[in-house]
Length: 248
Length: 98
Image (cartoon, rainbow over all chains, first blue to last red; front, side, top):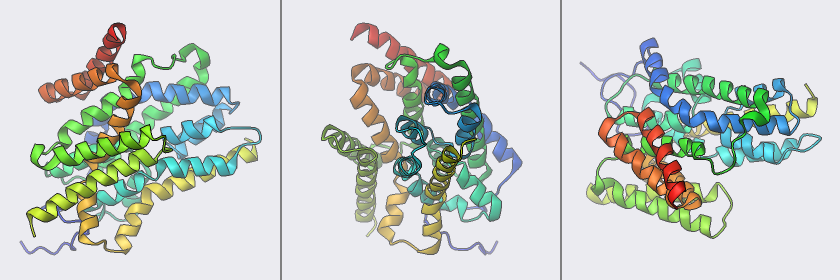
């Protein structure tokens, strides 16, 4: 009866206690399976380029296993040289992955109730997809934080399969740029937006603002990830301002 | 494994983990002002809208057709596999037209 749980850092936290169950992990893993379709073409490309840049299979797989960040790996491999550009690769990873920092913070309503390996291990598997699905689940009243880890681990496995396939098969699976299969990744993110939509009154203006700022910055040739970050933060700021006006 | 390659990979992994865990770790230590809390609550829609908008701006009309197909199928069926496959098919068909 008595609410003895610590005050959540971010309001809007789930009402009941947050749990972390094996069933939740499995459910996340199953829910993530369709996202493999979006991941595979991208992972194949990273594997193919990695082989082309002269990385051994072991080096390629180590990178996929412990970095596990497609866009960062792709950018680092484009900069790759002999000897390996250590600082440039680290900088590339930081620039591309800084977008993950606010995602982890926004998942606080679940993460606050986790401790130790469950908390820091779940964060190690955090990707865009697990963030989107996790927030949609939270808003629907979900209380099983294992869901996040299940998605992260499932997509991690898919990523290993894809980059391994790309490295081993090499040019045989290289798709030409602009091939429709590359759209699968964008299609996945478009599909993930649908459960995040809370109606035009709350979301139309902030989402439109995010798109407008991002595209304007890209047209001005501002370097990534500036267009993405400015668009996302601009849209979120507008939404926050609209919320504040509604409830003074 | 070559030491220079290993150093690059380990460095990338470390900085990526800092990005993944760092935002939450900072939030845990320092309670943010209410406006920042509200921004974090509202971040998911804008970040993925920006991501998709940037891609569509690069791809052009076939991408718009693909995303429209994804949204229609996702709303109608709630099935993400079906949505993604329909989206890819729509882009393929649109590339034949445009």
